[in-house]
Length: 89
Image (cartoon, rainbow, N blue to C red; front, side, top):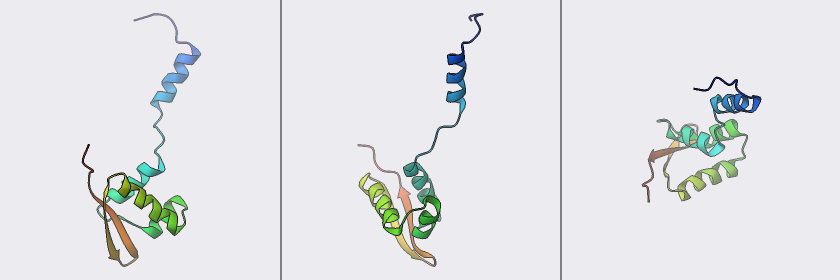
């Protein structure tokens, strides 16, 4: 080990790496859809501030990325849920 004191740059890098990383909206969407109860379009609108067509487009984007998404009718509207992990190519 070195007895040198840490520089300001080294200290700030250590603090940055210790902070939790920011979770993207796509990751947040996956987390919501992985729940056993899934998520309705209204829940996605409330969580992200999206219009209905944007919420549906985001779900469609996950489908195109290989996610298996189940859609079923629920009391509060259509419920979307990821049912299995995509196969790795």
